[in-house]
Image 1 (cartoon, rainbow, N blue to C red):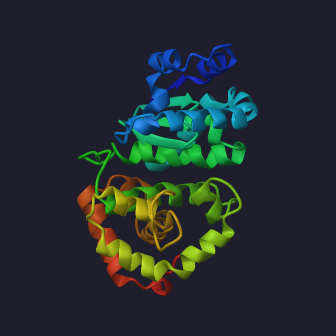
Image 2: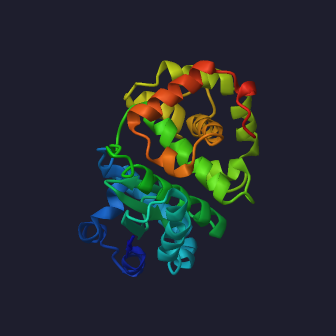
Length: 280
């Protein structure tokens, strides 16, 4: 296994220190800065650029503080997760960067991206790094690698996989911290627990949907939903925690999309959170 990290944080610091801050030149040299937009087919609008610049002002001290650590965070996460998944034959490509202050981490096209402006501390970096490494490995490990995009059910499985993995890897943190990469979300978790049965039923009814609005309803902060935002992460985590009673991490990481969808559908059909036997 090799871990290759391109560190673009110094390039941002040079850009931000420039008197005229030549944004177009900066992103032309480093197109990965816009990856969080382009991976979903969007383009940067002027209003969004202004919002991003305001965020850079807000997070300038954090960016400078995190700059020396970004590569280490990715490498340490790989050291922790690769043995757990028996994935030593998979090479990992990472990018440490300053993004658009919209996402803290993601995987696209087989590459892991970590955006340091949204990482508040070592605890957040520890959880987030392992979460994204889990994604970077779970997609290529099956005999037929998982695609970047798929139906809601595939996202529920993969997000649950990554979250349940970090919850086992770092038991000193609460489940809410694993789901949000930091403290302050205990009330959100309680809301998810109260609405779990209804959320399971709603997810089951939309399991095969690839509609962006449906996926956002359960997995993003921007989606319109009658449930707590991102409740799909919680439901997916409950699924994987239940499956872990009978399956190893290397096995769960290698399931095909068809197997993952089948197991998720069966679990949701049961739709009785009180019978799951999973610690909350």
